[in-house]
Image (cartoon, rainbow, N blue to C red):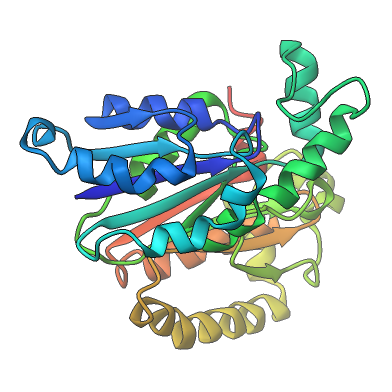
Length: 288
């Protein structure tokens, strides 16, 4: 049986993820008490549930504190034949605060004596045991609902052969390091095309920017250094039964240098791993 546990801080997109898995044929339950997880597994092993692709449950900070602390022990008590994955969704604090402000929803941990920002931080602490056990972490700070649904389909459900799913993403440091990054490489040492007037409004996807960076002596050296590291260690991560890996390439604004490098790395590794995905975090915010 396949079991997907969805968790994360409130406002990060857990309901969207659960609805997506329901659309994909999973038997879904929201806000399941952790202590009932073994009973659910036993129940869904019955023949009446055979037509479902698996079970998906949302477990979050609405659970009792002691149950959250026992999460790993409860998960370890499940039968060995259960194929379980933990999807943890999160976003930057500022994004979560903005979402609650826009929707005027009440945070489950906020009260007259607990302001929203404090509730969001408290929730992070409560969910640390689940976050540390997650097989896949998705940073939804700058994802639309549709992009989140696509990310779940591509990364969580895209491969059933046990191979490692690799995401290469560009980002801008001025908007923060992605929460879901496993490896982070800083390419700000290279000259910035932003300061070349005719290149400022272009991106690393455009040939003039690529030509500019290709002409810099350090570009090839830096690319060789990063790719040499990844050539050596990505196969080791795959051999260690790692299901997901996110390599994040950062520059100042996430428009030129990091995009250029991410494109080159994607071209290099898409033929070496069965599941390789590419995302330009900042460029996606400016799509028409």
